[in-house]
Image (tube, rainbow, N blue to C red; front, side, top):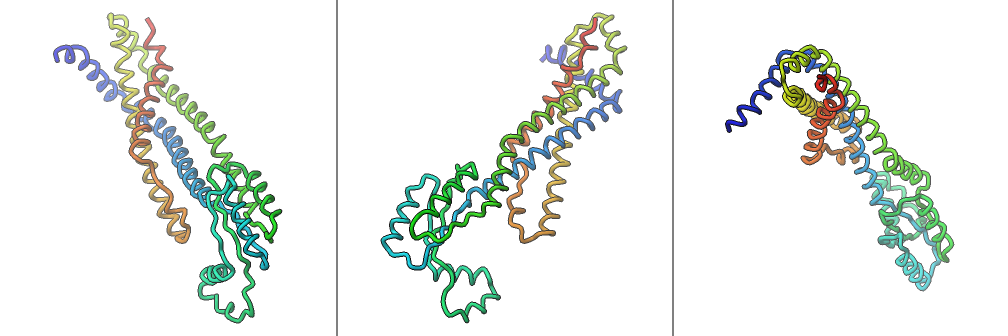
Length: 301
C-alpha cells in the first residue's frame, strides 16, 4: 500500500493536474478521437446490420420449378428424387395447382374475387427448392437452373436472376472490401490520434524539458501522458458510442415511420455487450498508440 502511494499515486495526481491545467488541449483531443471513433463505430454498425440482412435473404434463397400440366406420377417421382440428390438443395416443397391458386388468392387479398369466374385453374404445379446458404456464386444458381430446365416434365424455372446478381454482388462487396475499408479507417484514426497527441506534447515541451533537467526519470515523465492518452481514448469511446446509439435509435424510429411495412427495419440491431466492450478497449488502445507514436518530446534528454 505504501509503495502504491509513493510511486503510483503521484503519477495519477500529475495526470489529473495535466488534464486540469490543459482543458482546451484535452477537449480538442477527445473531440477528434470521438469523431474518428464515431466513423469507425458507424461503419461496423452498418456492416453488421447489412451482413445480418443479407444472411436472412440467403437463408430464403429459392428456385421455383414449374411443371407441365400432363406430368405423370412416375416422372413426378423421378423429378423429386433428382431434386433430393442435389447438393445445393436443402429441401423442396411440392405445390399443387390447387394450392398455387389458394396461395395466389391470399396474395391478392380483397382483389381475389375476379378469380371466381375463371373456367379452369391457369396456374401450374411447382417444386419450390430452398437452396443451401453455402451457395456463394450466382453462376452456381444459374447452372443449377439450367440443369433443372433440361429435366423432362419441367416447363419453366424461375429464380430471379437479376435480383440474385445484385444480392451476390452485395455479398462480394461486403466480404472482400468491407474489412479492407475498416482497416484503412482504423489506420486513419490512429494517424489522427497520433497527430493530436503530438500537438499536445509539443505544447508542453518546455515542461517536459524542465522535468528532464531536474532529474526526473523517463518513465516518471512519460506515464502521466500515457495515462492522459488512456483517459482521452476512454472518454472519446464513451461519447462516440453514445452518439452512435442515439443516432441509431433515431434512424430506426424514422425508418419505421416512413416505411412501416418494411420488415427489414425489425432486423436492425445495435451492438451487444461484447462489441461495446471491444470498442471501449479499441478507443483506449488508440489513445495509447497515439502516445507511443508521438512521444519524441518525452524521450528527449
